[in-house]
Length: 314
Ligand SMILES: Cc1cc2nc3c(=O)[nH]c(=O)nc-3n(C[C@H](O)[C@H](O)[C@H](O)COP(=O)(O)O)c2cc1C
Image 1 (cartoon, rainbow, N blue to C red):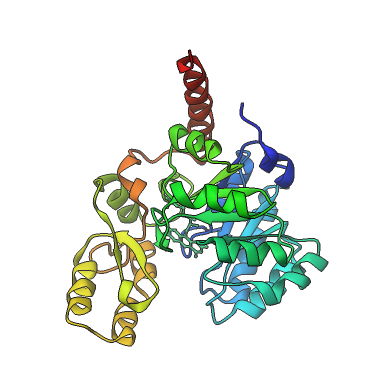
Image 2: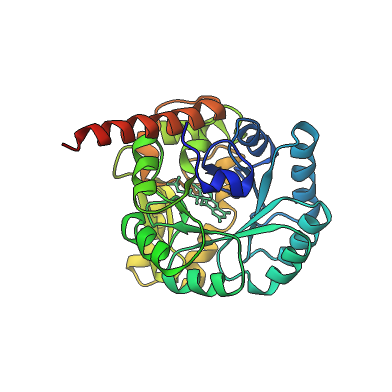
């Protein structure tokens, strides 16, 4: 089985991290992924700190394996969530939506490993200077809030720019994808979209069905004009957003239309007027299955691909 530097760094069996996804990545999913030998991550999103603590305690109750919390830096509760992860001695913190600079010293002092998600070389370099432990480089194929560069050019540029382990995110859902990002210089992968269809994921079954039904061009980008583009599945809401964007709606109007919509899709199962965040790999997800099977399929698949590639060299 493929072992990389990431397995040693995080003390995990397989070089697979489950993306911290707001509303979706609860303690249940994180537990299942960590138990199976990957790194499970709770997505704090905009949740208040006491709810994040409950999710952390759910994981700790079931497993002694390492896990993480993804701290969304735009959350109104970010300061309190950082306090909770320090109090709870969470082994790993990943961060999304910005620069975690002001929290790095406190997290490091508490012995917490810090791994920011970055969309560009400039931010990766800045993070490296601040002393983070690794970088998650996320390409714009990913579901959720995205940057500009796709995974293929982003990974090698970041690998060449920082002297840190780089984990690839965005567009990986199987063994071919893992083999590809390892070839680009990454030490492992962060997978989001495929884990939504893990059996242990508590997202509404309508959300899972929407992913299973998705075709290659269904995961589109909306809200580009706001400066905070989001990749989500086409539905009535994305058509409404596109219509007002085309008419030149103000940033505030577009953002207001999106408020509460992810919760509506994930918790209430409204996949028509809710936001169904998912990556371009949605069309590659064909079944709901245990998190362990997802991890093994990706890792065993990559091993097969890499062996086959070696045979191709004559
Ligand atoms: C529904 C959904 C919600 C997400 N929420 C967050 C989040 O709160 N914070 C974050 O850093 N990344 C978030 N992401 C990105 C994932 O953590 C991960 O990097 C991404 O899904 C990987 O690409 P993939 O979708 O191609 O697997 C989200 C992704 C999805 C699909």
